[in-house]
Structures are given as structure tokens and as C-alpha cells.
Image 1 (cartoon, rainbow, N blue to C red):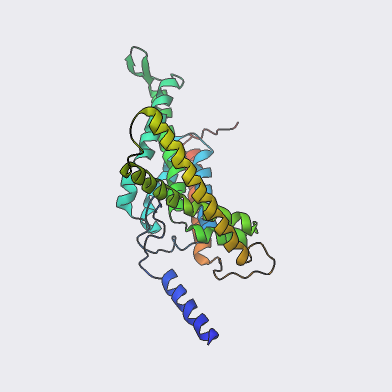
Image 2 (tube, helix red, strand yellow; image 1 turned 30 degrees about the horizontal axis):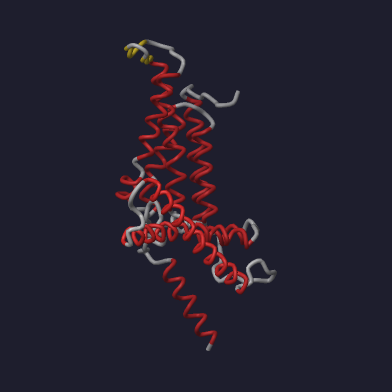
Length: 288
């Protein structure tokens, strides 16, 4: 009987994992995953490796070509991530805004070489400073987009399994961090409910002194609730033998052919970016 139950449970788990349509697993996720793709099903460690490789391709040199190649590859690969692209465009607006601010500062402070483009009081832009600003703008996007996009496709549970089973990190530490990250959204919700309850009872308004006292009392209540939940969670982890030798895992973290393909493609993009910058004579290494 137990064998049949185990087989049914395994079949359901495989059906959910390989279903072409997946639901949002984490309400606090920056960008929701709307469909399952080969890249989305890659091992979390593979996704981290891909993001780091692409970041290296854009980080080694401050030029427009190498960063542009990495950024172009990241943008073209967005449909393969399975993310909601409309939600990504709405929620990642701060990336180009931050990159634009970095570019503006670079254009103002960079060495003034080449022809003068803008000369208005303290603002002086030359072709050299604008080229440096453009390189910084593209470089900032090339560094941020792969990391944020790939991180949005990582299930925290899969990441914890991979860290423990492949990198042999301590189970108690990894699972504790996983549980803490999963409970952050719950803490925010509880704080909102607590604030609404205090306002309904008439103890949250009034003068600045009264509001300050209400804030500290709310934080104390939230701290007590968090300690109680942490105690319950610690007892549950102890009962499930976390950190004990010989513990088995229901979810196995595995590598597949798609993981190798993803790493090879990222290495190819990195090599093309560096090679293109050298061929066009714009390679400007950050060291040396």
C-alpha cells in the first residue's frame, strides 16, 4: 500500500514539475513565471552560473561593444525564461532609470576629450564623456538584467535543495535562511493587519508622540509573534531530522543536458562580447 502511495505521489510531483503551464509559486516574486521552459527548468546553480558568466563578460571592460553584446543576448533570451514580459517591463522600470542616472553622472565627471557637444554653464559634455556615459548605461543594464531575470525564475526550495545536495552546505543554515525568506512576506502582511486593527481601535492616530508609541508597541507585538513562530519552526525542523546524518530527500536536485547547454551558450556570449570589443579596438579593461 505504501509503495502505491509513493508511486502516485511521485507521479503527481513529476506532472506538476513538467507541466507546460506553471502558476506563480511565490507571491513576493518580483517577476512571475507564467510558463515552463527549458531555461526555467534548469538547476538553480546553473542559473546562478549563467548570470555570473554574463556579468563577467560585461564587467571586465568599460566599453559599449562588450556590454552591448551581453545586453542584446539577455534581451533576446527573455522569452526563453518563461517570465511574464509585461510584468517585467512594469516592475523593472527602475533599472533603466538607475542606469540613466549613472550615465548622467559619468557624462558630467568623465574626462572631457573630443569635440564639445554641450557647453552650458557648469554642464560640459564632449564626445568622449558621452561615449563613456553610453558605455556605463549599457554596462549597468547588462550587469543587472541577467541577474534579476534569472533570479526570478529560481524557486527558493529548489535552490536550497541544490545548495545542500551539491555544494554540501549545512542543512540547518540553508533551510533556516529559506524559511526566513519565505516568511518575510508573511511579516509584511501581519504588520499591515496589525496597523489596520490598531487604527480600527483608535490607538494608532493622534499626535506624533502617540504615533511613535503605537509604532514601538506594534513592533513589540510583531517581535513576539516572530519569536513564537521561530520556536515552532525550530521544533518542526528538529522533528524532521534536519542536520542529522543519513537524512533522505524527497526532492532530488539533478543536472540535465539543458544545464550544460545553458552554460555553454553563456560562455559563447561572453567570448563573443570580449572578442568583438578586441576586434573593434574598444577594449578598455578595468584592471591594467
